[in-house]
Image (tube, rainbow over all chains, first blue to last red; front, side, top):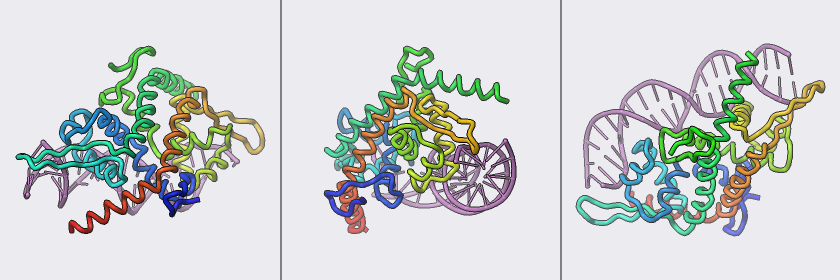
Length: 129
Length: 129
DNA sequence: CAGAATCCCAGCCGATACTG
DNA sequence: CAGTATCGGCTGGGATTCTG
């Protein structure tokens, strides 16, 4: 059932459902990290860029724009010289971020087990060949 | 601090930490959907492909292979004719899937709000131009 | 500082064909 | 059934440059 009305629920398993598109936008590495970085309060563009480490200007801009378009992040510009811009979580974004943080923290916590699994897997592959 | 030892925790904000790589692998659309589809029990390759809808053979194969390599999914082959293969969640994968499902369900639940936000955003953009 | 615009290349991904 | 292999288009994304 796919969701013309506000009350209806999307179905991520329906390729025609918009949820697919949105899921693709929010289920990515940079989104997880950006939302996590905004969780402590408003952050400015370059501070965000520094905090994330390794993200390009372009990707940060795209990610923020998508998040803003989906109503998950708000953008406020202040008429200082030079201009100051702050990004912050919207109420909707805050609730998404709770889940995202759990995901990120889970990954950080279990990275050791996954690396071990990788070694096993690669070793078995090598034996096959 | 980044995680040579099993006991240590990764840091997703460190570009050099393996957590970055793994996070990129697990935080994507297909992974979310595959894990969700495996949550009810073992599923075979083609059943999975049908369940997901819109995924190519190649992407499904890649996604499953990555999940297996990271120790999140197990693969069992049965010597029937033709061969039968079942994919299932590992214990580690089950715990990740809990988080993933929350994320997917959240998206399905709030897709209406996000679509509304998109319309607002696009409308404001149009007015700007 | 906070971006938009441009260029350009690696690699993602779908389609197709083939194997056990 | 359950994949792997290969090819080719297309675009995601980095580097650079320019603007308000």
